[in-house]
Image (tube, rainbow, N blue to C red; front, side):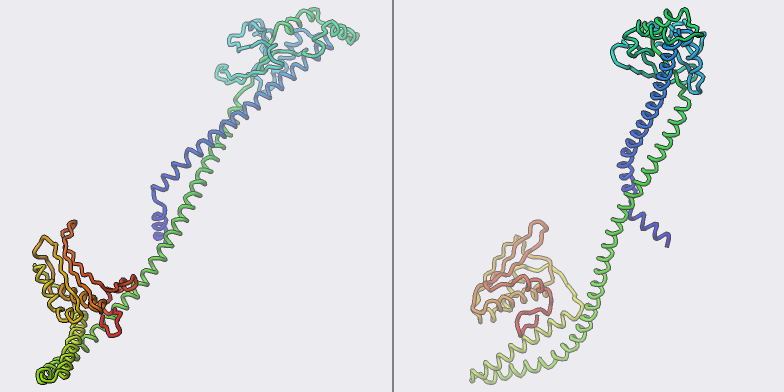
Length: 448
């Protein structure tokens, strides 16, 4: 049973169909997965950028508070910068001048040096609050660096430096120890376009990004498999419905053929029975025809009696023809083909019908246009076919007419075509569909 199910499934879903589904769905899910990965990467970058900006603003706030209340200079800013850099993700924090000189650094030994890989620092006045970021390699460690102009005093106090200084003098209490270098050093930090750079370790970012990328790829593969399974299931279901419909049609055809076989067997049995009956009928017909012929000759001086005897002979001959046809239909048909003359076959068949044609005043016209003098056929069967056609024409032309027999060549397959036409009423489509039934007739006394 499992083997049958597997075979049925493989017949419903072809390898070409599977290849088509994969070919269509692969680029779709690849684009979706890449887009999701790009969004995740952008999201992680935004998180790192927000973390760096938050750290810079926190440092600027601490610097601003120290400078306003305690007259901090560059040394105090250096101390705060070193304390801030103790956070786990911070690789470095530095303040550099526009020329790249390091004014303060989380590593005190770097103070005063010139930053080698200084980033592009546009004019800090060009925008209200420019923030930039870049990725760089520090040894073997990848660093996400956020940098912006260092503006801890960018407030209303910057526009009025004298009032700011006066305010700081007033707020300074007894016991506070201002730096002597404060007023000079803070100007170096604040008024020369200094920049603050915060370097964050990308190890945690890379781990998170790798985890999210694995999840994105896994989800993409899962959705791809589900999509393929869904599409293949739909195709298999449609193929199953089609196969089921074909199976129902095949069963109906099988039932119809069974009925036709039973009908054929029934007709064969009837044919055998009819053949036996026909033999029994044919035997006394010879005696009846002999007596009728005797009376026709005996009463030669009595026209009425002679006509009666002649009619008896004709009817016996008609019955004999019907019996002959019945016997021919009941027994296996033996066809003996040979080369026969076209004109001889047509002339012989018309000669047999000459009396009946003359009796109904039917004119006969033959038109033999074949270039061949002979053709290959069974002369007896062909003669029987022509006689049947002539009889149908006689029945259709009770008031006389013209019977035309035309013979032409069929050039495509080198066959011969014999046409029998008359001036009768013709046959409708329903009658034409039954003309090959040997017992079909439209006459009450017809034999088919």
